[in-house]
Image 1 (cartoon, rainbow, N blue to C red):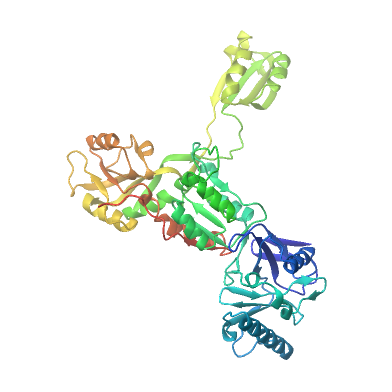
Image 2 (cartoon, rainbow, N blue to C red):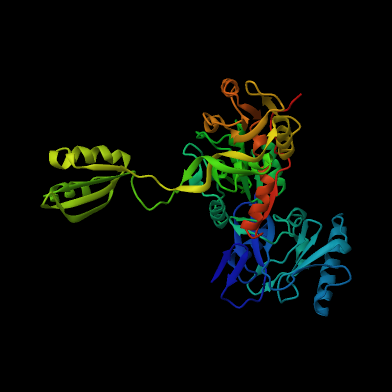
Length: 521
């Protein structure tokens, strides 16, 4: 049995040929279709590939990528000879001479000194050759033997010049499902607002492995092009590129084109958005670092998502003969944890009933109990609240260790965000030298989170004109940084956090083209 697991290859068979070989069929160079995992031994798909090459079928060009178990060093440059057996070195030199002759005959450039070789197994014939990033030649495995490389001279030139689908220097990879599960563990999607659209938004057909995780604040077409150039397997876009439902997938709108390009190039798209806003190690915690030393608490704390109690309300009542009522309650949707215990009430033997119910079931339960006045009059309704999570929730209320002037705090914010300008509205009766001790902040658009909060200063990305006027009238100073400027800098910190969380099993990179669309001119 053979399995893939987050960068490791497991097999209970004797291992003779260490590398795992993945063969891709592409409709045109650079466009990959689903991959077939092979292991260098007998496999029908290899034979099919061999036949495709022989008959020059129209289905596409072959492209190869390699995942490496840590069994031995497999990849080396031919500079001063290959450090294997003398037979290996002779075989490699023969192959290089064959390729050099074939290249000269076809008027192609070939430099033996720049050629690289990958040893594919115990047999001397099993080598694949690269020059730079170009796959020059590879053995076709069929049954128990490999075709000599000299045979490849008859294969059309376009089939031998293929860009490898994965950077050979990167050996780490992870299955998409495993990676998404780990991302969900990093910041639970249950923390996101109910209106948000978070999680895996675009999924290539399985199996899909990821060697590069690409981070961006906004997934624009320019950023998508960058992600494809970086050969990303998954794009983590802080803002969800799919928010409103799409009724069609055409080439007419830019968001539809993003979906098309992602699927055509087998790139997944994942968005955490407000889950990262609420997380204790998320965007708002990062933004609070702009203030200097301070203590912070969430403005709107998050409740535990998996609290064991079901339902929003607990109902308790007692009755002398509860069987008829209990049978109807058990059949009622939204009713759970129904328990009964004998009880003595007012000197009479009765049954004490306790149940949990949802908001929608509450009215039905009370309508049933109201049919018996003695029961209804003794019924108690208890509202159930889930426990709040520590340091988790929307926005932050920050108390500075030492009060600072508005002008000083403004410079700190600009330095932390890496922006030359912010917008500032001084509270009524305040100046640039007025002291600030308490700051309420929210990354992005913070009006709904900050509204009504008592503080010396509001820090957010954007607020409406009238909301700013309301804050100023209350004596609250407002700093606006533009929406994405209050979020984007978190990606560099996120890069480091995810590298540790994912145990460096995938490469994590940050977009260089992602930027706020607004400029001060």
